[in-house]
Image 1 (cartoon, rainbow, N blue to C red):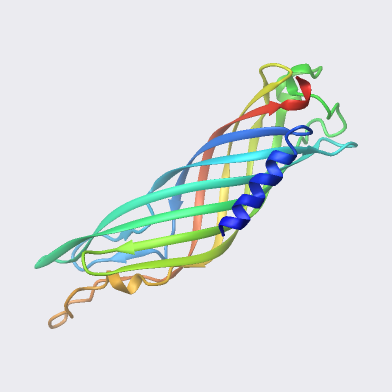
Image 2 (image 1 turned 90 degrees about the vertical axis):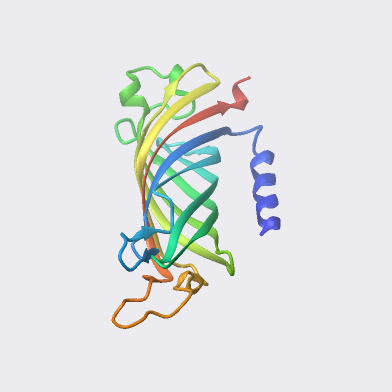
Amino acid sequence: MKYITTLTFAIFLSTAAFAQLGVNATYRTNNAQGWQYVGAGQPDQSLLPESAFAIGLDYWIPMKAYRIDFAPELNFSRMSNTIAIGREAEIIEASLDNTWLSLFLNTNIYFLDLEGDCDCPTFSKSGGTFQKGLFLQLSPGVTWMNNQAKTTEKESDSQHFAYSLGAGLGLDVGLSDILTLTPFAGFRYYLPAQWEGLDILRNLEPPIGPTTADAVRNEESSVRQFYAGLRLGLRLDQR
C-alpha cells in the first residue's frame, strides 16, 4: 500500500506546474447499521464514531469546451472510538481505530454556466459568483480501510477495499487570480464492506439462562456519510 501512496503523491507533484492544486478539510457523520455492538441491557453502540474529520489533496483538470472539471483527490481520515462490552457483572472497554485512505474521482459540473469561460479562476470571470461558481460534484471512489479492534485480551486487524459514490454541491469564491475558496457539502454511500475479526467483542463468558449474548450485529456493513467542508485552491500557473 505504501508504494501506491508514494506513486499517487508523485503524480500530484508532477502536475503542479500545469494544474490547480487544492487542499480541503471535511467534517463527516457516520452511519453504519451493520457495525453495531448489541449489548444485553444497554443501548446499541456504533463501532464507528458518530463524526470524524478528513483531509484531502486534489488537482484540477479542466475540459476545454465545457465547464466540467476533473479533480482527482487523495483523501485521508483517521477515526477512534471506545465502547463498553460485556454484561453488568463484567464490563470492559474495547478500543476501535479506523484508518481510511481514499481516491475520489471528483467531477465538477458548472451547470449554470456550462459554456462559459472555463480557463480562469472565479475571481477573473465576468458575471455573478453564484452563476459562475456553483457546481454539482459527482464523486465515485475507492477506499483502503484498515479497521482495528482491541480489548484487554485480544485484538484484530482487518484490511479491505471499499467502493463508494458521492454527490454534492460546491461554490467557488475567487479570492484572487491565484487563490479560490470553495465551501461544499454532500452525501457519500459506501457499498457493503468487511470488518473481519469483530468476534473478539463478544461476551467473555457465555450467557446464563435466557440472557441474550452480546455480539456485533454484522461484520459487513454499508456506510452512509453526510459531509461538509472547505477547499483552498492554488492556481500555480497564474504566478
